[in-house]
Structure formats: structure tokens, C-alpha cells
Image 1 (cartoon, helix red, strand yellow):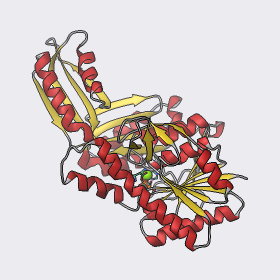
Image 2 (cartoon, rainbow, N blue to C red; image 1 turned 90 degrees about the horizontal axis):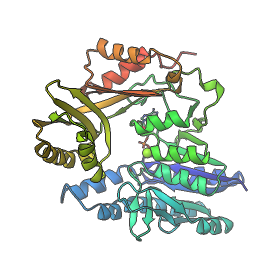
Image 3 (cartoon, protein in one colour; image 1 turned 135 degrees about the vertical axis):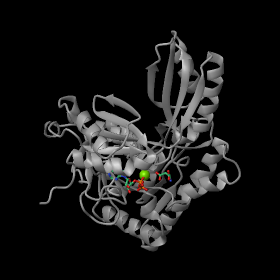
Image 4 (tube, rainbow, N blue to C red; image 1 turned 60 degrees about the vertical axis):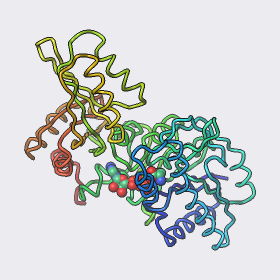
Length: 407
Ligand code: ADP
Ligand code: ASP
Ligand code: MG
């Protein structure tokens, strides 16, 4: 029997009526002759509310206890969905991540799935159930509950689809596909019929939260075709697939943004071998991921080193940087938490030039200053003032002519 994995995000299960809508979609797949696994996120903004509640006690809560707290959100949704299925006369059973043996490493709040024990799911399917699994959570080898990082329910769904060799992996959300940019910022953004794993991975890593980046990485490694589609209509969505010939002509597939960046600069760092290594080793030892790095050579035997980290790591990175400044005999540390990053992504950039020039021109014409630039084979990113972000996304999208063409 074909196996379908369906995943529904927070806004798709935000209230009882929406949960009933999800149950109807599950039953429809089952009636078409499929085995069905449904992965759900916490209802609406539950995860945000749980985090805010902990932060009312301290701004540095223990990560193990945060996972214990956050995982409760998904447990509510799975039980509610099972109850909805039962009320419609359908056999269904819900499981938490630990119950179905989603084993992760022990990095609380950003754990990675190591293995999935599929026995329990197979048994429940054989018994005729629709199987409901809590997204975003697992259990570490030390037997502690873990979570997979914000947006991680997508990763639960793709990991299950890979482990069970599913025929379909549909990610249902509040937009009907992947667009050339966030349609909430640019209403004329164009829906993509398909997008390659590599482009989607870049877009997701650069902030497009429509898919969790780890889910795309897993899909690519295990050849899972993902379809991103709407919970609220039956339109075909966007397929995330391997690159094929027809996709080479598309130079730019999308514009992504990230409001979660902050910048730290260590000014007047003595210019000798090993200094950068010392700075970034100390930061890595604290499990902090550094994004962009820029070094300006001062000419007086001193350099300025600037880098960006996520907002959640800002306070700790600043503390480490101030210590390093003293140890290295640098002049001072400057910081800026009012920045944002805007990026252009496209596999066609490997063979077409001029995209960077267009992106910079769009920003210049909109009067937006570029603070930092970084590039790779298929992306260009600029750090700008966070207040300018919406205007920047719109201007770049216009300049690259990515909008929907009237048909
Ligand atoms: P869910 O709760 O279903 O997981 P998310 O909020 O995590 O949903 O992701 C869906 C959101 O992603 C959309 O509402 C949209 O605002 C945002 N988004 C950002 N970039 C894009 C893009 N390129 N295409 C579609 N949606 C995007
Ligand atoms: N509920 C979790 C979050 O809000 C996981 C998810 O929605 O994918 O991040
Ligand atoms: Mg999401």
C-alpha cells in the first residue's frame, strides 16, 4: 500500500475547526487507499508563548528544561487530532517523538535526528490506524526529551518519510507553495512550480522559514520529494526536487531575508598569524555559529574583524568578544543588533553574471546602504539596516523582475 506523510504547521492546527479540517484531509488520503502518517506542530503560537513564559522567569533558561517545556505544545496537538479522527469514525493513534523512537543527539534546542525506530509505526499502520506523530521532538541517547530547532516539525516529517520510504511527503502550511520571496512582504511574488534541493536549502538557511533547512538537507540526502502546499485549498503546491536540465535557465529563483542577525566588530586587532583562529575557536567552543566574517586591513599593523551571529547568541558572543579584546590587546568592541540580511539565490548564477550588480543597483536606487557582503556559487547576501529590510526585499525583487507575469 502506498505511504503518505502529511505535515501540518502551527497555523494549520491553530483551533479546533482547523484540527477537524486536518483530520478530513487525512481521512481523504486513507480512503484513496494509502497508509497515512500525520505529523503536526503545536497549535498556533503555542511555542512562542511557552518560550515567553519561561523568559518571564529568566532570560537564560536551562536548555534541557526548555525542551521539556516546548515539547508539550506538540503533545496537545497530536491528542486533539486523534480525538478528531475518532469523532469522525476513523481509527487513529498518536505518538510523541520519544514514543516512536526518534533518537537524537543531546544538543538541546537544536538536536539532530540520529535514527528512527520504525517498528511501532509499522505495527500501528498494520492495525489499520492513521498514525499521528508529534513534530519537532525526539529523545536523546541520554533519555532526555530534545527539540530540533524552531520550525523543526518539517524535519520530523521528512525524516519519517525517508525512514519509512514513503511515496509522498506533503508539507501543508498557510501559503500554497514556495514563492520567489515571502508573499507577505511582496504580494506580487511568484509561486514556483518546482525548486531544486540546493536552492531551497540556501533559501531556508538564509531565513525563508517556509521549510526548516535541515528538512531540505535530509530530503536531498534520501531523495525525498517534498511538496509544499496549502492546508486551506487543494491547489498543487511547489515540488522540491533534484536539479534537471529545464531548471538551468532560471538564473535567480528567490530572495530570502533574515531578521535574526546581529553584528559584532573587534576594532584594532594586532595583525599577526593565529589571531582569527583564536577569536573564532573561542566562539565555536561556546557552540555559537558565526555567519558572515569580514576583515578590514588597517595598515598600521592592526585590523578590524566584524562578524554576525544570531540574536539568541548576541549577549554571550559580546561577552566573549570583550574578553578577547582585552587578551589580544585590541582597541575596542562595537556591536549592532539593528541589522538584517537580504539574499538572492539561484543555481543559474553559476553560469550567468550580473546578478550582484543588479542587486546592488536596486539597493542603491532605494537609498539603502550595504554594510557587509558575502557570496557563494549560488547566492549573494547583503547586511543592511533592519528598518530598510522590507523596502530592500521589494526593490531587489522588482529589479530582478521576479514578479508574477499576467497571463
Ligand atoms: P508552518 O507553521 O506551517 O510551519 P511557517 O510560518 O513556518 O509555517 O512557514 C510559512 C511562512 O513562510 C509563510 O507564511 C511565509 O510568510 C513564510 N515565507 C518566507 N519565505 C517564503 C517563500 N519564499 N515562499 C513562501 N513562504 C515564505
Ligand atoms: N512548534 C515548533 C515551532 O514553533 C516547531 C514547528 O512549528 O515546526 O518552532
Ligand atoms: Mg514552519
